[in-house]
Image (cartoon, rainbow, N blue to C red; front, side):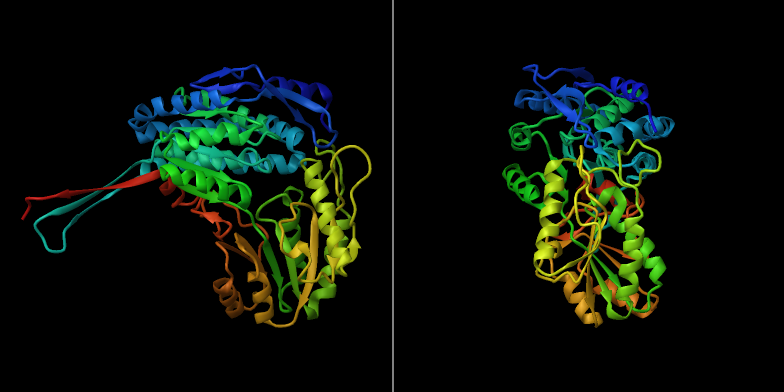
Length: 490
């Protein structure tokens, strides 16, 4: 358990202004907004609340820094990221506590996110020096093709509250490696982690104006003018599909390059030949990471009839044994949901499922008292037409339905507008490959409940997004190809 003095020290060490042009400053009109502890409802800090003028100042800073930063040696850009990576690891406990205070997840999970977030900086520090092009002879001879890769230019990043460090470093890392400047807007529920990261990058030697951090409660008023301005050349957004659609419309005016990681509705398929204990372990990872508040969270559990009762019983036993509480307390495994709106949505979705005939195996209700807690829940006999099977839950609820045939499971899994990730548990190699090929998603977790890795391409299809983050292709989202035709050669 942390003590109040330590919490206060960590909170006081974080900048609370806007990072524009390498300087922390208040909002132009002096406005502030409160950051809340979701476990208690108490105010943690007051931070600057940007105006549209602040947003344009941040874009101007990024635009003015772009040419110089693009000309910086790739090795030097990589070394900045490497120093930031090392600083994050050195400050793991401090950053984890900060994250737990503003977001709610248990400290152990926050520490894991700090490590995960830092790894994007290490990965892309190595990719910075591997940006290459090509040189070839034209098929008909007489000329040559020269292909070079150049930074796309100033970027706009909008990140969510559920992974307040990792969703930032996953965008910032490749942008810096590629030579792009950026304006980033964190979610207003969790700006402190991004403020801390901004200062770490400054301390690591990032030039002024390369990264600008603006917190804004009126995101539309601040970000839309930046997107429509014309000086920004790329938008990267992680968040809901609904907001993503609106941003795509705004990007169309200036034809901004876009990459988006949007909503998910992951299925979790358990076949009768699966190792049930391994499937339950995978389910705990896929469902309960971040209290279920993850786009990769298993949302719909489809279990073959022969093992459905065993799987549901073992999963309910594990879920019911989890300790719920403030993430700073010893032994806590499940923290609060991020706010009242998030908890109310879970309450509504579970109520709808029960009204359609589902049964509660364990949990099924919010926790009384302060904070936005909901009990880990397993529901069985969940009908396909319940909202739980069609909407992202973003909470600790596992709805289980039974299937008989492989085709039936695939039809249910693919019956969604989303296509981010699906999970499959089977010990049959032929089935594993066959199902993986037929599932309509950008990622598949095969006998594992965890797919996120900085060295792998993360992203979805359908209405789950555009482009990929991470892996060897992650930096390509921030590079433009330029083709030079060379004539007069024989």
